[in-house]
Length: 487
Image 1: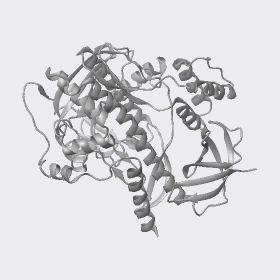
Image 2: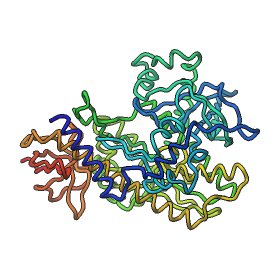
Image 3: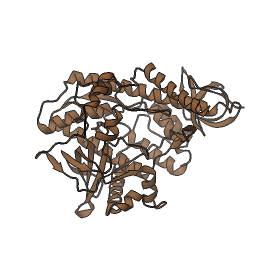
């Protein structure tokens, strides 16, 4: 039965991919192209710097092998620091118009489901030949940033370089070490100078975080469900929570993405921007704040919302993930748009930045690969490889497929949750309303971390409301979990 359950989830995931217009398998032509790629790309010349001797490291999930970025820090005088972010040079291996590129352009993202991963690029590339894997020499695009003592990015540069990852590290163990609650990870301790290096990076990231908070970035802490397997059998869905090491990478990537966007603008290049528009359901956010004894302005204001979130996290940390989820739902989804040179940037409401793109994950996201091609053309003084109308179409397609990929991940997660809950019909749970519209009301329970539909007793409920529910029905095949309001 256990193996059957695992196989069933795999079949559900594949069907969900097809139903959402995503390709679960690589074409025969892509497989044939892959056979012709014998090794990682190597280039040399004055335009490619040799930075292999720096103390580069990666920090990602424990099981991640599709490593897109490395980082290293150099302390400067006056408490300033220079941060280097190396981004995997995927473009040098995956050329436009090739079968592998066609698959990447069709799906536009790696899809991470509770059953299996559907990679945007073949795993032999994304987890090996184009991955910034430990101890391997790889081509990269480096974003160099000088961070002043007050956290401002006061200078930047972008160039190509050869790099070598000295330490493949994981979020959880690095976070516990940074906070003094756990030992240094073995690889961290084994590389001379790496412990000091990570301390410098952490301090720089916290400076960047402080600036982002002051400018109105939203410090949200949502909890994503992570599938936990025991001997290949789905055992639980547990929260994958934020931590100090994730913050380090997050704030470096925000800064690097902003630098890339600004560089393309200065070079007169059109670009794909990542935007989050001003929330349309601001009124409901105001209501949520009022229910917690807080006041927000009638018109959307990022700084006011950011300050409110900081206060709530301090006042009720245990409930903050629930509040964060409610705010995320009400903010709406981010999207990709064409940014023409000289055009006013739409900006990202949640990050409180005007110039923002996606450039740091070309193994996992197609917009990042497109941006890398634009960036390398600008670096070389070549014409942009895409016209504006083509970029507009790519932006719309990537936004659509990102939404479809999220639906697949949600579908499989719900099927996994239904599988875990099917023996618990009649039990009651604490719940939070996570969605409310004319299509229905959805609630989330904490253990296992699962979302389902409230089919009875939903009148008058809205996003952010708490209640007690009883499990009424599950359907693993369709991912249905039905609750009724407990009296």
